Length: 422
Image 1 (tube, rainbow, N blue to C red):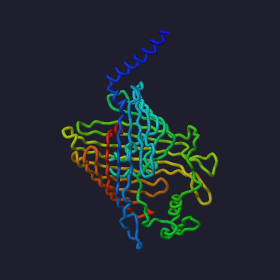
Image 2 (image 1 turned 90 degrees about the vertical axis):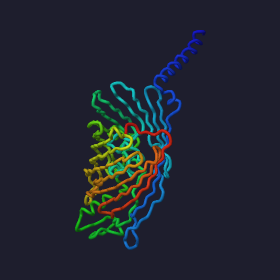
Image 3 (image 1 turned 180 degrees about the vertical axis):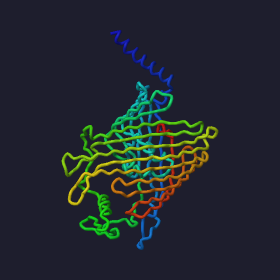
Image 4 (image 1 turned 180 degrees about the horizontal axis):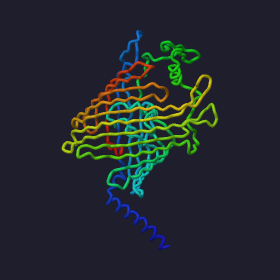
């Protein structure tokens, strides 16, 4: 009995002393007891000319003030081997879990694992929260091919090559290719084609657009219409072919003291991206690949005051769909691509400015969309900034171009980081 009592007293004491010794060596006890907590507030106000008056002239209106997002971040080390991070997003649509994942950062063989819900390691800008981008509006190429930022719920494994030169390889598996966004374009009524406004030489019949002189126009328009019996995502019970698989390779090149380049290539594939509701056992796949190049100029003698980054992200999307050809429904593959390019110059601690341009084909059809914008940012302090942005959106055949002016305010309280991002 005495031995049992002694063990009950000694073992907890040893564990406590071991934990205290580890905490003193690693400095992690404070973080363990007091998690990193931060809050981000993103407010936007916009004006646009997407509306038209009775004479068909575009007029300027506003969607008013819009809380794009408010994020609560909580994170801490669980023990010497893992860390957990939580990000909750609040908006006018309600509250939701944006990210929640555990990271195992002390695995053998230079491996690191991440499990939970997180922004997928695809390309460059997909890994940034919207408020941490240097511009006010998200790249629309992500919206076109993913429906927003590619959000994954699954498992990711990364490997840091044991070389003097930085090389990192990512592999992940998650539930499916689904996007997440709270950033939307102004709804347009400016010359948007519909049943009451057919394109020249066309007419509507039984909800379908018919263009005798240009059948391709009718085909592309009909593709844009919602199909209540169209393919649907996999259900709750998934096979391995229903899951999405992603791979990424990234590296950096040092070009002297002031210049560096980040390079990356990504690919994501889902074999059973959609299931047909018309034909049992028929599925449709989706593959998206990307290449991103980012160039940085950070002069050592004035690193905190001046700098520049510019680059391009190219994406190529192949997806299968179910479309009507004459009186038959057929499986058809669409291969579309596009690119987003940007440049930003940091004049000093207070001011930075830049521009971006993107050109991409819509995921269905042959139309291309182009957006060009410029932005000016006043960094009031490290914790708050005000940004003014102008963007012209050329929406292609089915709508006139739209001009938009966005005023954005970001405020940060406490801790906030998104890992290895620059």
